[in-house]
Image (cartoon, rainbow, N blue to C red):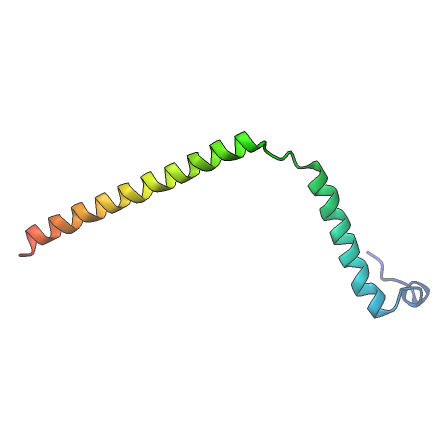
Length: 79
């Protein structure tokens, strides 16, 4: 690996331009990536949202049931 020569260092832009160039590059790259995204249809978004809400609700209910069961069991043992 070689270090940059003094000519390469002097040809670089000023610090204020150097900080804005990566931002423009980042936003341009982000925009290009977002153009590649396959966005879901309204129907797919709705059905998958319902599935997520249903699964989270069932998981919360099962965790609450297990917690109540162990709480009941502990109250029976440690009267």
